[in-house]
Image 1: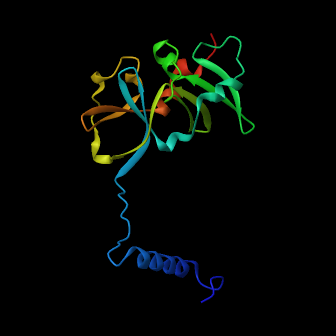
Image 2 (image 1 turned 90 degrees about the vertical axis):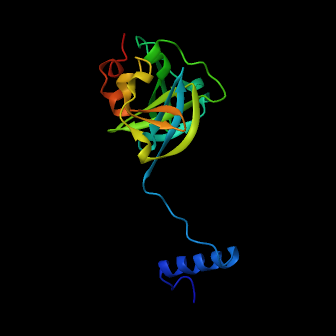
Image 3 (image 1 turned 60 degrees about the vertical axis):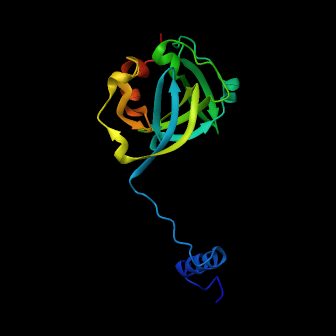
Length: 185
């Protein structure tokens, strides 16, 4: 059968069959667990947090800071503006915003571009672990006392991940915070 005249699903089926033939008779289709969610893990001081993937537009190295334009009269945690593919992007130092202590750039530091309700901005994070997947059943009631008082208002849910209590950091709660929406001094 000529590929251009075949139905796309038939072509995919043929490709699947060919791969199984190469891998052997015992190969089985991959199973996807719909009961998982994924996010970017990071740490601020002792607090281990996760931002859900639904809010993450992209993750960049911190070298974008070299192209920052400062904004006169802005609070210290508002690092400035940069251009990301021709679009203005506000850069916020999350550690400085929450704890009034600037982020120390390390090998594991990243600029996480987040998007929510047509708002897009970059969060400078000191220590990013990377993408992780978590079973939905790990989510528990808020173990809020485990986290620093500065972070508590932004914890949506908490969960125990192999003995480590992590907080689901709420981007909507951050955006709704009056202090966050007023970067002017």
